[in-house]
Image (cartoon, rainbow, N blue to C red):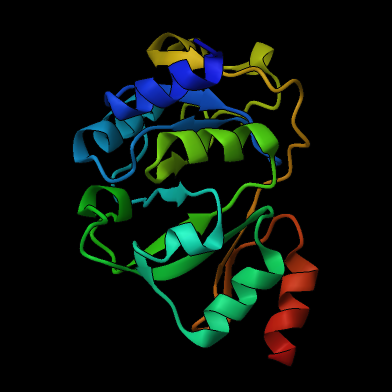
Length: 194
Protein backbone atom coordinates (compact mmCIF):
# COMPACT_ATOMS: atom_id res chain seq x y z
CA UNK A 1 0.00 0.00 0.00
CA UNK A 2 1.39 3.42 -0.94
CA UNK A 3 1.88 6.23 1.58
CA UNK A 4 -0.89 8.08 -0.25
CA UNK A 5 -3.32 5.17 0.21
CA UNK A 6 -2.32 4.91 3.88
CA UNK A 7 -2.97 8.64 4.28
CA UNK A 8 -6.39 8.42 2.60
CA UNK A 9 -7.31 5.43 4.80
CA UNK A 10 -6.18 7.34 7.89
CA UNK A 11 -8.45 10.27 6.98
CA UNK A 12 -11.35 7.90 6.34
CA UNK A 13 -10.85 6.35 9.78
CA UNK A 14 -10.88 9.75 11.51
CA UNK A 15 -7.10 10.07 11.98
CA UNK A 16 -4.81 13.00 11.18
CA UNK A 17 -2.38 13.32 8.28
CA UNK A 18 0.38 15.84 7.56
CA UNK A 19 0.56 16.75 3.87
CA UNK A 20 2.51 19.24 1.73
CA UNK A 21 0.85 22.10 -0.17
CA UNK A 22 2.07 24.95 -2.37
CA UNK A 23 2.21 27.13 0.77
CA UNK A 24 3.19 25.18 3.92
CA UNK A 25 2.57 21.70 5.34
CA UNK A 26 -1.08 21.13 6.20
CA UNK A 27 -2.83 19.08 8.86
CA UNK A 28 -5.50 16.98 7.21
CA UNK A 29 -8.52 15.23 8.69
CA UNK A 30 -12.02 14.46 7.46
CA UNK A 31 -13.49 17.97 7.42
CA UNK A 32 -17.12 16.80 7.65
CA UNK A 33 -16.41 14.59 10.71
CA UNK A 34 -16.87 16.72 13.86
CA UNK A 35 -14.70 14.37 15.97
CA UNK A 36 -11.82 14.49 13.47
CA UNK A 37 -12.11 18.29 13.29
CA UNK A 38 -12.03 18.42 17.11
CA UNK A 39 -8.76 16.46 17.05
CA UNK A 40 -7.24 19.02 14.67
CA UNK A 41 -8.17 21.85 17.10
CA UNK A 42 -6.76 19.86 20.04
CA UNK A 43 -3.42 19.05 18.40
CA UNK A 44 -2.94 22.62 17.22
CA UNK A 45 -4.15 24.10 20.52
CA UNK A 46 -6.25 26.32 18.26
CA UNK A 47 -8.89 28.68 19.59
CA UNK A 48 -12.25 27.10 18.69
CA UNK A 49 -13.64 30.46 17.66
CA UNK A 50 -11.22 30.40 14.68
CA UNK A 51 -12.69 28.47 11.75
CA UNK A 52 -10.73 25.94 9.68
CA UNK A 53 -10.94 25.71 5.89
CA UNK A 54 -11.32 22.58 3.84
CA UNK A 55 -9.42 21.34 0.78
CA UNK A 56 -10.90 19.54 -2.22
CA UNK A 57 -9.34 18.30 -5.48
CA UNK A 58 -11.23 20.70 -7.78
CA UNK A 59 -13.75 23.54 -7.77
CA UNK A 60 -16.63 21.29 -8.93
CA UNK A 61 -15.89 18.91 -6.06
CA UNK A 62 -16.46 21.80 -3.59
CA UNK A 63 -19.93 22.63 -4.90
CA UNK A 64 -21.85 19.90 -3.01
CA UNK A 65 -20.63 21.53 0.24
CA UNK A 66 -21.01 25.25 -0.51
CA UNK A 67 -23.44 27.59 -2.22
CA UNK A 68 -21.70 29.91 -4.65
CA UNK A 69 -22.71 32.93 -6.71
CA UNK A 70 -21.70 33.32 -10.37
CA UNK A 71 -19.07 35.86 -9.31
CA UNK A 72 -17.61 33.44 -6.73
CA UNK A 73 -17.48 30.66 -9.33
CA UNK A 74 -15.73 32.98 -11.83
CA UNK A 75 -13.22 33.95 -9.13
CA UNK A 76 -12.59 30.29 -8.26
CA UNK A 77 -12.15 29.39 -11.94
CA UNK A 78 -9.50 32.14 -12.17
CA UNK A 79 -7.50 31.47 -8.98
CA UNK A 80 -8.00 27.79 -8.09
CA UNK A 81 -6.07 25.56 -7.86
CA UNK A 82 -3.77 28.02 -6.12
CA UNK A 83 -2.69 29.54 -2.79
CA UNK A 84 -6.09 31.13 -2.18
CA UNK A 85 -8.82 30.36 0.36
CA UNK A 86 -12.28 31.43 -0.81
CA UNK A 87 -14.96 31.97 1.85
CA UNK A 88 -18.27 30.55 0.59
CA UNK A 89 -21.70 29.96 2.13
CA UNK A 90 -21.65 26.46 3.56
CA UNK A 91 -24.31 23.82 3.10
CA UNK A 92 -25.76 21.85 6.02
CA UNK A 93 -23.29 18.96 5.60
CA UNK A 94 -20.44 21.21 6.80
CA UNK A 95 -20.27 20.93 10.61
CA UNK A 96 -20.27 23.91 13.01
CA UNK A 97 -17.01 22.58 14.49
CA UNK A 98 -15.21 23.43 11.25
CA UNK A 99 -16.66 26.92 10.77
CA UNK A 100 -16.85 27.94 14.45
CA UNK A 101 -20.62 28.20 13.88
CA UNK A 102 -20.29 30.74 11.05
CA UNK A 103 -22.26 30.50 7.83
CA UNK A 104 -19.18 30.63 5.59
CA UNK A 105 -16.39 28.12 5.15
CA UNK A 106 -12.98 28.53 3.49
CA UNK A 107 -12.46 26.47 0.34
CA UNK A 108 -8.95 25.50 -0.81
CA UNK A 109 -7.90 23.68 -3.98
CA UNK A 110 -4.14 23.33 -3.40
CA UNK A 111 -1.85 23.73 -6.41
CA UNK A 112 0.27 20.76 -5.35
CA UNK A 113 0.21 17.29 -6.92
CA UNK A 114 0.53 15.35 -3.67
CA UNK A 115 -2.11 17.46 -1.86
CA UNK A 116 -4.52 17.11 -4.80
CA UNK A 117 -3.90 13.35 -4.99
CA UNK A 118 -4.66 13.06 -1.27
CA UNK A 119 -7.88 15.09 -1.65
CA UNK A 120 -8.88 12.89 -4.59
CA UNK A 121 -8.17 9.62 -2.76
CA UNK A 122 -9.80 10.75 0.48
CA UNK A 123 -13.06 11.27 -1.40
CA UNK A 124 -14.19 13.84 1.18
CA UNK A 125 -13.12 17.40 1.98
CA UNK A 126 -10.07 17.44 4.25
CA UNK A 127 -9.07 20.12 6.72
CA UNK A 128 -6.77 22.77 5.29
CA UNK A 129 -4.89 24.31 8.18
CA UNK A 130 -1.18 24.61 8.79
CA UNK A 131 0.47 21.62 10.47
CA UNK A 132 1.77 23.48 13.51
CA UNK A 133 0.83 24.31 17.07
CA UNK A 134 -1.04 27.64 17.00
CA UNK A 135 1.30 30.57 17.55
CA UNK A 136 4.37 28.70 16.29
CA UNK A 137 5.98 28.92 12.85
CA UNK A 138 4.31 27.02 10.01
CA UNK A 139 6.32 24.03 8.78
CA UNK A 140 7.87 24.39 5.33
CA UNK A 141 9.94 21.25 5.78
CA UNK A 142 9.23 18.05 7.74
CA UNK A 143 12.27 18.83 9.93
CA UNK A 144 10.31 21.92 11.14
CA UNK A 145 7.25 19.95 12.25
CA UNK A 146 6.28 20.45 15.89
CA UNK A 147 6.77 17.16 17.78
CA UNK A 148 3.15 17.31 19.03
CA UNK A 149 1.89 17.38 15.45
CA UNK A 150 4.24 14.63 14.26
CA UNK A 151 3.16 12.36 17.14
CA UNK A 152 -0.54 13.01 16.52
CA UNK A 153 -0.40 12.25 12.78
CA UNK A 154 -1.07 8.69 11.61
CA UNK A 155 0.75 9.41 8.32
CA UNK A 156 3.22 12.14 7.32
CA UNK A 157 3.53 12.69 3.56
CA UNK A 158 6.92 14.03 2.52
CA UNK A 159 6.79 16.57 -0.28
CA UNK A 160 10.20 18.13 0.38
CA UNK A 161 10.41 21.83 1.17
CA UNK A 162 7.30 23.92 0.41
CA UNK A 163 7.35 27.53 -0.90
CA UNK A 164 6.06 28.88 2.40
CA UNK A 165 3.86 31.92 1.72
CA UNK A 166 0.40 31.76 3.29
CA UNK A 167 -2.74 31.54 1.22
CA UNK A 168 -4.75 34.72 0.75
CA UNK A 169 -8.18 34.46 2.42
CA UNK A 170 -10.90 36.29 0.50
CA UNK A 171 -14.66 36.75 0.77
CA UNK A 172 -15.61 37.42 -2.85
CA UNK A 173 -19.22 38.25 -1.91
CA UNK A 174 -18.10 41.32 0.06
CA UNK A 175 -14.84 41.89 -1.81
CA UNK A 176 -12.89 41.69 1.46
CA UNK A 177 -9.43 40.14 1.76
CA UNK A 178 -9.27 38.75 5.32
CA UNK A 179 -5.62 37.68 5.15
CA UNK A 180 -3.09 38.90 2.62
CA UNK A 181 -0.81 36.17 1.35
CA UNK A 182 0.19 34.80 -2.04
CA UNK A 183 -1.38 36.55 -5.07
CA UNK A 184 -2.99 39.24 -2.86
CA UNK A 185 -2.34 42.04 -5.38
CA UNK A 186 -3.74 40.04 -8.31
CA UNK A 187 -6.80 39.14 -6.24
CA UNK A 188 -7.33 42.78 -5.29
CA UNK A 189 -7.14 43.73 -8.97
CA UNK A 190 -9.67 41.05 -9.93
CA UNK A 191 -12.10 42.16 -7.22
CA UNK A 192 -11.89 45.77 -8.43
CA UNK A 193 -12.50 44.79 -12.08
CA UNK A 194 -15.32 42.27 -11.59
